[in-house]
Image (cartoon, rainbow, N blue to C red; front, side, top):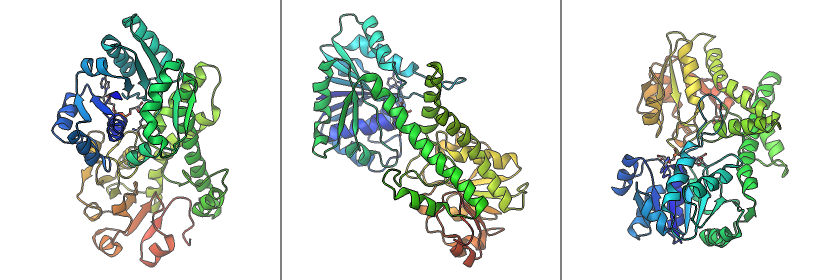
Length: 437
Ligand code: NAD
């Protein structure tokens, strides 16, 4: 299959490289000339484990290439994926579809022969209809079908997720799209990945329903964690106790500082807006969004509480900035709100993250960056563990205590056992766990 991927970000680049690895001929397109230049020079513009090897292997095999010009590859393509960004629209929280529609317009002018155009970006229900309308308007004689194929990969484990998905969802309105889409994913049939063919609008909504459900699950356990702190129960045991029930499942039941990242915040908001527009409000998701928004800043209060209510003039060390480990993605990371709240309370913040500091520096002001956990702990009155990178899972507490002004650790990811911390002489607080657990 000849495949074109429009947009070479986290989703486009990973999907493109994986499709090439399946044996397809893939051209990844991006408007960002610097990104394409870097890729052509053998570099990778994002941090994603395993991606560099996968890209270089497939480039060397002649199956994967990069360009800023979509016309020639689109004319030769069997299937064109749209994997551009769909951020929250400033002001109202609807998904900003301008990149998707711009891509559709450009694709339309370049089509040659029957082509399937697929939205891989997360797009609100009905977007496929509009993409189809735009293409027909720009190129009335084009032979094409528009399909929806939302992506479910997780950053940090993106290649594994793409190659071993729990399911592949494909929404079609035109039967001519079925064959090419089956062909694109045929290598995954060997992994017995279930393929769900459905209508286009249903497919679009599946993606939002999935993300909203997961965001709700995280928010649920976070509220239970708050209750645990009030009543002296342990949220870790509660997660285990309910997660062993197959109807509930153990994933996404880790209490923490609230969900963030490039998908959950914008997708829950976009679903909420779509539902309101159709006078069918999703009240559970409205509550989820409101609770999670409050939670991120409220985590700073845990730090204040650990320091007798006052951080003014004190230095706080922050471990981890990205919204989760193994990515450099800083979009909507809880660290942003937590650090802002600490600064508002008068603290000086020093931070370290294995991959996220470059992006963080463009989003935060007044933060000092260190070279390691111990570096940012130097002279700090408290250290806050915000993202559970492996590098923070086996800290040398003797060393940490030696360099800190006060031995205070606020662990927002429940990485360490409270009893062990007490034995080490660390003043420790975490999320939803009593101090003797
Ligand atoms: P991203 O910002 O990393 O990448 C988008 C890329 O598209 C950018 O490089 C941008 O330059 C490029 N682009 C924009 N308009 C273009 C055009 N007209 N032609 C060519 N290139 C263009 O975004 P992402 O994280 O890869 O997300 C893309 C989509 O996938 C979003 O809808 C997102 O919700 C969805 N998604 C993301 C994830 C994830 O974990 N990041 C997971 C599942 C789904």
